[in-house]
Length: 453
Image 1 (cartoon, rainbow, N blue to C red):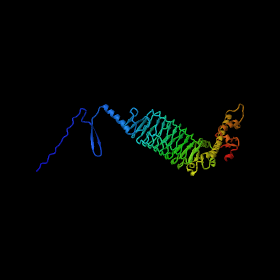
Image 2: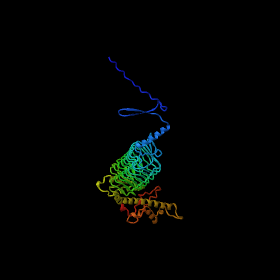
Image 3: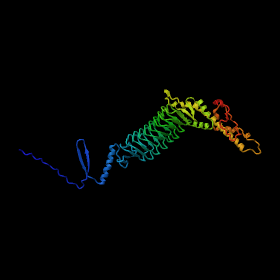
Image 4: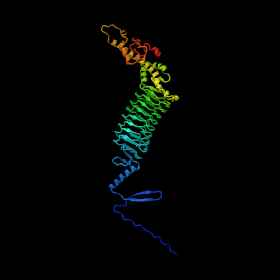
C-alpha cells in the first residue's frame, strides 16, 4: 500500500511593519463583478490630507463638466451641495447642486447656466445683478428665488417649468418680463407686478395652475397674448388704471375667474377671445363709470339704472350700482371672425351716451346744492333794515356761477342744444325738517327728450 503524499503548506511571511504604518490603516474596497481587491492606504499628515481634498474637489468639478479653476474663483461645498456662481464664460453649475449663490460681481446670468439642474432648490442673487437670461428653465425642484432690486430684465423662459416655485418677488425697477418667463410654474400662487413694468409678455404666466392672486402695478400698459392662460385658480382680476391693451387669449380657460374690474378710461383695445373659456365670468366691471353711478344712486336718483339699461343693448349692462361689459362678448371665440376691435365700437357707440347721462344727473345734483347754499347764506345773513321773508330770500344762481359749475363738470359740450337751464323746485319750508333731494328738481331744459326722462 502506497502512503498518501502529504501536502506541502507554504506560509507567506508577514512583511515588517513600517514606521508610518499602524494597525488601524484605512481600507478601501473596490468591488468588480468578479473579484474584490483590498487596498491598504496608510494615513498621511494633515498637510497631505488637505492637498488631497483640494485635488479631489477640483477633479470632481472637472468630471462634472465644469472648467478647471482654482478654489479662489469658485467654492463648491460637496457635502452640502452649495455652489458660488462667478459668471465666468460658459460657466455651468455642476449636477446635484442644491443651493446656489450668485456672486455680487456678476451682472448677467448666462444662457442655460442652471438649466435642467433638477436638484437645485434655492438661488440667492446678490445686489448688482442686472439681467437674467434663459438661465433656470426646467429646474424642476427650485422652490425659492431671492431676487435683488437691481434686476432690470428677465428674459424669455428664464424660470419656465420650475414646478416647485411657489412665490417670486419682482422688485420695483424691473423693466422687462419676457415671453414664457414663468410659464408652467405650476406651484406659483401669487405675483405682484411692479409699477415700473409696462408689459407682461406672451405666455408669461401661462399654465400657472395654482396662481390665485395677481396685483398689477400702476405703470402696466399691456398684457400679452395668453399671458395668464390656464390659471385655473385665479378668481378675481383688478386691472390698474393705466392699462391700455389686453391681448388675445390673455385669460384663456381661467375657469374659476368670476370678477374682473378695469378702468375704461385708458383701455384702447381688448382683443378677441381675451376671456375665452372663462365659463363663470359674466361681467367686466367698468370702474370709473360705476363709481359715478353709485354716487348718483346714493343721492336718490334710483331710476337712473333703468334709464341706462334702455340704451345699453347687448354688450353692456347696469345693475346694483355697476356698469359692466358683457364678458361673453370676449369669451365666445369670435366665431372665426377677425379681431374687429369690438371695444372701440363699444366706446364710440355706447360709452359716450352713458357719460352724457351720468353728467346730466351730476349737474342736477351740483346746481341744487349750490342753490341751497346760496339761499341759506341769504337767510343767515340778511341785509340791515331788510324785511325780506325767508321765502323771498330764494334766488336763482347767477349766470357766471352756473357756467362755472357746468365747465367744471365738463358737460356743457356734450349736447347740441346749447346750455340748458336749471330751476329748483321749491321745497316745503313750512316743515322745519324738510330736505331737498336730487329728484325734487325740474330737469335741465332741453334734455328730457334726449334721455327720454
